[in-house]
Image 1 (spheres, rainbow, N blue to C red):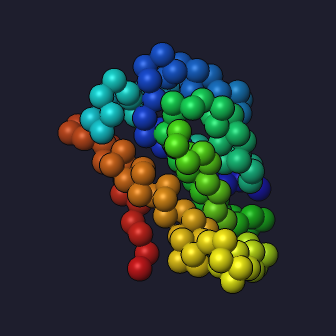
Image 2: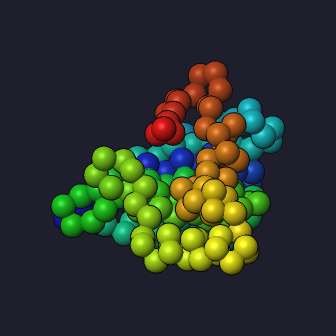
Image 3: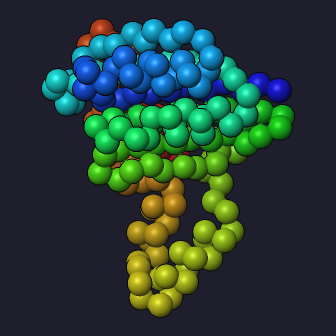
Length: 164
């Protein structure tokens, strides 16, 4: 059983670009050459997209291989398949990594225990329920990555739309 997905490297310092390629190649088991273009949202950084195909769980392996570099902004998506839900990983230096399970219609699926924990934190005054739900949906990551998602002139653009 295979799935497919996309790796979006939103911003990487030039010196890190070959290391990203090596990490991706190590996960996929094939040579990887990304088409790097300048990232106008963060001068001095580069961006790239890479479509991949692999076993369910490949998105997790890619995110794990890339998460150790603090200067890297990226997202990894995996489409749902017959044996697994889809996934989305988003990472920023400031927020760390976010993981969401994605259903067959593109919705984020939030596990019951995470919802119960958010409600408990809100009930005890530890947190605001709206803020907790925002984090469960990945809004802080979306807010931080949105300027980087716009590729700039001459580069491929894939918009990730927010469902209202």
